[in-house]
Image (cartoon, rainbow, N blue to C red; front, side, top):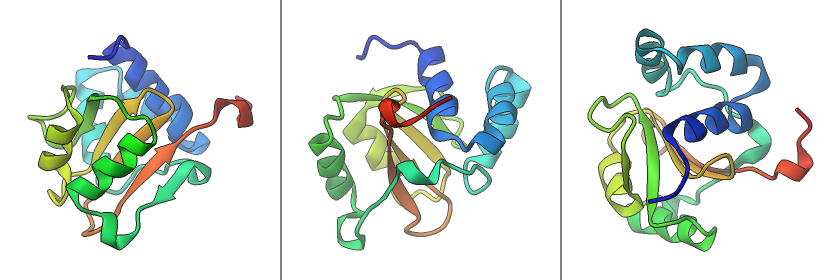
Length: 142
C-alpha cells in the first residue's frame, strides 16, 4: 500500500483535478458523511475536471487490461484509492487491477487515485466515457 492517507488522496483529488469553479464546493462535500453522499452522486456526470489534465483513452484500449497497461506505463503503483458512487468501493484501498475489474463498464461514477494528485483514472456513467488524469505541479499556479 502507498504511504498516503485517505485525507491526502482526497485533498489532492480536489486541489489538483477538480476544476477551479467547483473546488470549494467539492472540497466541502468530501469532508462530511452527508456531503460525501452528495459527492458520490455527482461522480457519474456532475464533476468538472481540469481539462488540461485529461488524457483520452483510445477506444481499442478501454478494456481493463488496456487501461491497466496505460496506467502502469505512467508509473501507477500496485494499489490505488477509490472514490465512487458505488458505496461498497467508496473510500477503499484496493489493488489497481482489482479496482479496474470492478469499475470498468460498471456505469458507476468512480475516481481512482493511483498517485495522489499526479495520476488517476475516471469512469463516468456514460458507456465508454472514461479517461486518465495526469497532473504536472510545475505547470500550475494555485
